[in-house]
Length: 401
Image 1 (tube, helix red, strand yellow):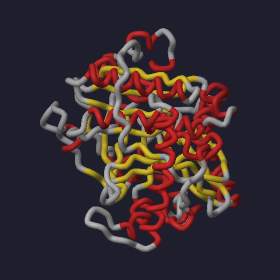
Image 2: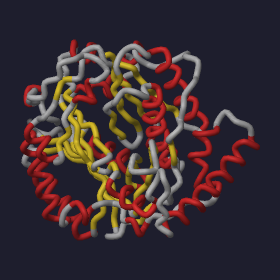
Image 3: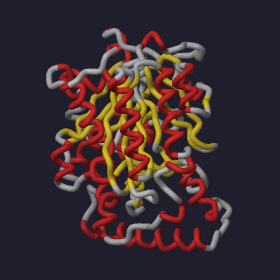
Image 4: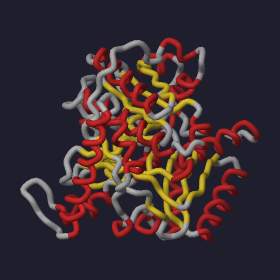
């Protein structure tokens, strides 16, 4: 269940089909308002949808690979953005995969980049499926891709997708027959992972639990109601934010820093990889000192870094449905489940949920002064297991429309 294509209000007029499409979109500062009013523009027909997921992610979770699963999804976003350095691209992190839309004109370099991402996944003992699907293919199938922009902070504008087209692209990706024409294969691997970082320890929920939620509603208005009710239960964004600045601590051991080491140096020698580990330890030492002393350099106000970190967290998003990773108490979790279950029984929504004790952090750094994004997911399964919960519900008890 998602917002039907004809409910997308095309009141955002974009006058060009050029790479400037996403840059030109206005940014809205309230997710509920955006969902309710439908401030979406149609993705230009000449653009491409890059979509990925980790095949067999449930089995990989049993092997304790969720940090690596998150990391390879973020690494793909980073690498693709580095292929289009002068173009703003809409993207969404989904836990065990990612979606990013790109303009035409750079397809060979893009394929090389995506092949490299797949090889990095193999190095992490994962299989990353990636499809490159023209928007025209999705439109020919009767789908719509509406794109909107949410102002998360003064320095982070998050893409939102509606209309069903991205979900249909995911269906193509996972179908062994439909995906054959679109899978990334046999390109020469070449990618730039500059900006990918994974240096923070897991963050234990300050309220006891970290919930990963995926909610699909029957109408834009229903999303607005769900968000309002969750605000009432939890006390609002500052209370349910999954990360607090005082909880942030660096990882130090080779095992905990291995994910970044593997992605940034996978093709290098053991000596180079060890040097990179020493580099990470040094950077953590320097960064911790700069932040604790609130040092301000010409490039970065380190005293404000953690404040910007919290503001730039990616923990609520809209991708043909509402996805949230929030902190709450056990009592609040029970109230949330009771409310969502009542709405589900009424045929207004379908939801998936996963409960953990902590959150994972994977980062994309453009500049340490404000321009850094921190992707949040629940530990031990997060969005991946919430999606599995939702899938099982669709199979056993489809929601009424």
